Image (tube, rainbow, N blue to C red):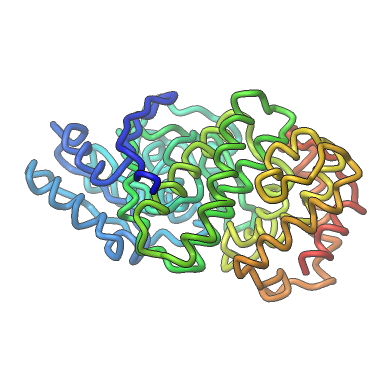
Length: 385
């Protein structure tokens, strides 16, 4: 019997992360001296997970006023960050706690900047750096994005339909308490875990990768491949959730260092056009055929991750088709069934999406190991439709 993961404290970049059951108690020290805390949440997850109640109890013990903002949606819009910042500015919030997954934490990162500056989300995307930010803590509720440990945020801009990632800031304190992931439904358990898997794969195969990234990414992928099938059959296992949460966190460090590339570039295009497409599901729908092209380009790096799915995949370009089939069948066994066509995409959408994706890869995804052409993108999209 494998013993459950023990609690630990990790200092990475500007974040102090507390990992483990009941690690939320470490917020007690962070909230000391604060007077008005803004809470950034989605509509139901913070409450359903039990995290909101425990945060409120901590704030109550310290007689701290809280101001809730609970309108964050999956694939959040920039306007949500602006609205939240306006509310927190009006209520004189002096610090922020994000209680949620990647979408919530990304909005909270942005809000912590906007409240203390005259900057807009558009200016942040353009790389304008803030002089001051509000103190920010993150209580993470999913084992997917790694946003609790990285510096990035992703927002969708309604006026253009563009989904843009940008450098925001690190949380000061992050809580990875696996108890709060136990209420994730099956679909979100699957999608968030596959999100973390593709973080591991893309960072390990990025042109910015290194030995440290590949060590973390291989460990993350190995845990996810072994643990996710078990977790989907035993949704209330705290130990299995802990392992998936740990894998997501270390994969978050990997993308913080080496970034993502082709899959995130293409998925952001699709979920920007249709925010109903869950990010992790979009990555998984597109992923197998992207892995075919990536394995052809950088087979040694690719095989470091894919050996966990099929140890017979060789670090050779000639095994690209085998890699594609192995990942596709792995995801099928987990119950990934939908395609892009289930979200309203069709053949008529391909020319515009190809043209846009080619442009953003040239402009923003210098990490991409594949020589991306129209034919490559069409091949990937047709497979995903």
